[in-house]
Length: 66
Picture 1 (cartoon, rainbow, N blue to C red):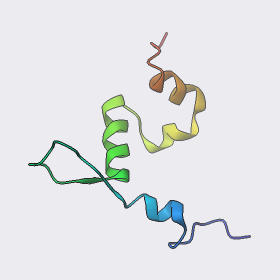
Picture 2: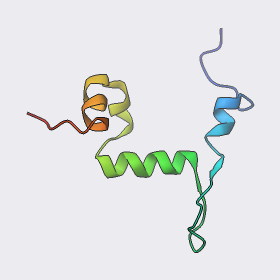
Picture 3: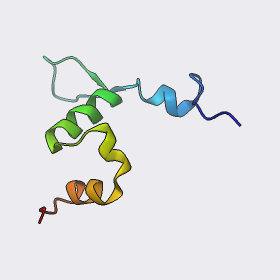
């Protein structure tokens, strides 16, 4: 069984799809991946945090630390 994703897999292809920016005519369109990276940055998350379910849920649900 192969552990990596094939470049032709639909999930892999979706990460490069441009997200429709309705009403933002002066800005270039972003890919799904760019949108996720921007959202994670705004929330103070990084790729390593995706493996920490407790931290991820707290940040996504807006829970305060402590």
